[in-house]
Image 1 (tube, protein in one colour):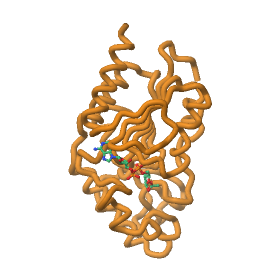
Image 2 (spheres, helix red, strand yellow):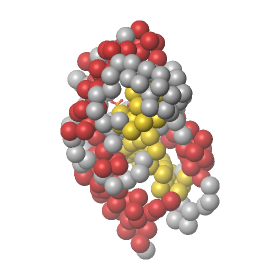
Image 3 (spheres, helix red, strand yellow):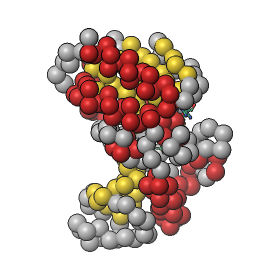
Length: 235
Ligand code: OAD
């Protein structure tokens, strides 16, 4: 990865950035993992056991994600990406498309609700509506389409690219994630080891390895952070 003149910023986002758009987080009070058991919807074993139930869970999440709008935090990160270009890598654990609709291109390490993956041939298909059980893959003809999301026990996407960026980052920012799920939970430590400053923007401090923590609503603290970086960049 080529060195960036102003230094490389890596931003990791989690469910907290989409909370104010109306999408539930996972581990907050009333969060998704308090409503359904993770083991019943978010593992390959769950899909093998009861594919219809798993499809139904992701169909509901896809419909919900399609019905909400990006908030000020997503929009601010879009603005930051336009200002910094390749000097920013935006990584998200979220499977919604609110970064894209907020004007940013994100590296989706946990996949996307808006893509279907063929379990038989590995082809990916853009997907907007409900995904039926045993839906046919247009590439290989097998009835093997599943949500293109990373389940527990599966390998997150784009890890080599992300680790390369973390290795040259001068600033790592964690936004709206509880830091409970690896490998993303280890990114701050990796960046710090590589010499980056680490910053957390969250409703509450998570106690992770951060040099600085700003607490508050993402829709307020992310635009403030973005404005300060753009100002420093313009100098
Ligand atoms: P969590 O639900 O674990 O954490 C959400 C974080 O967002 C918490 O730290 C909250 O304090 C914070 N938060 C909530 N509302 C906020 C707001 N308005 N502004 C700022 N922060 C806010 O969600 P993630 O950390 O994203 O993986 O979860 C990580 C992974 O666990 C997910 O990608 C998913 C899940 O299981 C898979 O399904 C593989």
